[in-house]
Amino acid sequence: MITEDMRTTFRQQGYLVVPGVLTPREVAVGRKVVAAMLAKQPPAEGHTGPHFIFRQFGDQGHPLLDFFSQTKIEELARQLLRGGLGIQRPEGVQVATTVPPWPHRPGGPHVDGLTPTEPDGRPGTFTLLAGAWLTDHTSPGRGNLWLWPGTHLRFGRYLAERGADALSRVEDMAPGPYPKIELGDPVQAVGPAGSVIFAHYLLAHNIGDHAGSADDEGRETLYYRLQADGHRDRWQEAVTAPLSEFA
Image (cartoon, rainbow, N blue to C red; front, top):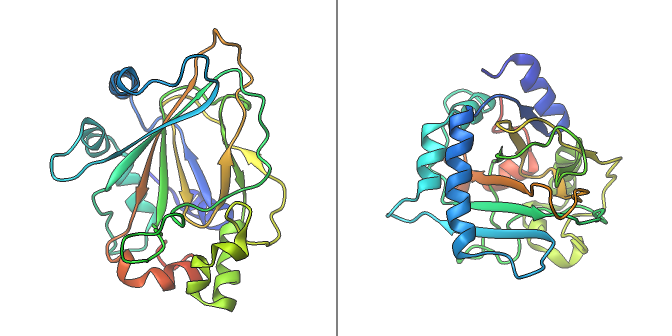
């Protein structure tokens, strides 16, 4: 259950790590599905670092859509939203893995969904990123997500001053893309396998290093990009008033 203190943390920091969302059995189920997907789309021989698989669900569904529906991810995400808003069926999933060793420090953050845009030209905004950790992130340097706390609010002010369409002017936000705002110091999200991280769409983030050896377990995370009911119709408000969809 999401408490009021957790909502406050999310509003202020732009992210929240909730441990124990997935049961050990659910973690095992998720890892089995990921293993089958990696068997079909493995990283190249000798590859180290990130390896991603993207799947759109479509009408036929997918085992990782079933995984989302059968766990508590949707319920907890909904509890972060303001009253009366639900979560739409996710359109797809990103399987994010990191093969060690990968001594990488991100040079800066990015925001998702801008390149390419959606077919109608709308930037690919959403409400909330939900990341289900299938492997352990208790210590930093294990492929942990890097985050810049509070940047969702500063990015929102940037867009409120320039208009929501400034989100599409990627040339003004290079590199990244992310605008030239005060970032502050980054942190690495930590927690055990079975945790879920929720992050605001505008929050500055990027993938970090994996300091393990070639014999160590790689990082496995499932990312769902979640939209609140009606988000597409009010996306301009959602990015210029970044807490408008949240409790």
